[in-house]
Amino acid sequence: MTEAAALDASGLVTITDKAKGEIRAIFERQETVGDVGLRLGVIGGGCSGLSYQMEFSERRPDDSVIECGEFKVLLDPKSTIYLKGITLDFQDGLQGKGFVFGNPNATNTCGCGESFSV
Image 1 (cartoon, rainbow, N blue to C red):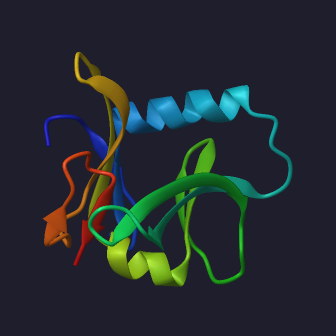
Image 2: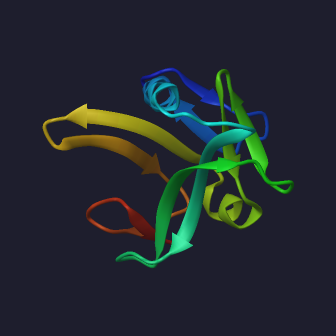
């Protein structure tokens, strides 16, 4: 990885500086109240069987929490199994822009990169 990244204490998720900057900008545009963070999750569906999910959510008692300065990243126990070791990046270029998940646990991914299987 060429860009500096933050790794949480338990080694769950690596978030690049570029992704952190974009997440920070989104939080600044949103009017969130309470203990709200960015929830990363996995849901059934997509071309390869599982899809990534990102949403604003309140913290739940069983969440794993990654502190990223001004915001928190939340992971539920079921999703943590599939997301352990991922890198979350943000890319912008000629091919489009958006968040990109690099998942070392995925055995198969679809062409768009939004779904995977293990």
